[in-house]
Length: 273
Image (cartoon, rainbow, N blue to C red; front, side):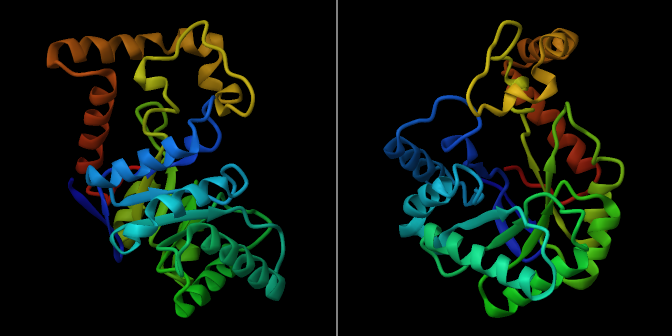
């Protein structure tokens, strides 16, 4: 497994996004199977595991904590929190209390990478950055990050406490961050961690016209999975299959190969989760 640098963290080039083991993509596997899958990913060379307090209301962090407890010193764990609209001391108290709850579920004394799970427009990013800097000084986190942040938000936050990573959606179907955010991360030495590199499974070619989604499946509200958009985007899947036939590759492999080439050309520090 190749590695990437997220500022001061070294991670496997491909990370394991654990969300689907607790919610978001249909029927859940049994807990024992989820733990086996996480451990198997580590055995295959993955050292970068991504979770969040909001995935299954803490359930996902508990799975990750149990699965990785015996190899904790050999892995990088990232988790996230949605920050409520509080300021000053209340903000500090809120973030630290919720981090402490995550640490208990993760069975560890620190989180390697702690993300703000989307930027709350009611709180200046500088205040969040200051709180995160305090947690770094305490040793409770090694670095921090933002999710889906815009260039100005990244610059302002990084000026207070340097960002370790920015995590945003990025795939062949979602490229809005190519023009400004990815080059900015390269300029500032910030890692860029794409989520949904397969466009929530769309680029796998497994989900098409007639597919249905229920319960808390996130694809119920992702517009690319609407009947009309599935039909409109079919030429993209046709292209992936056509290239794959020539190269002896699956649509997944083709989409990742093209995306990785784009990342290299932009000289950004990119990992995948």
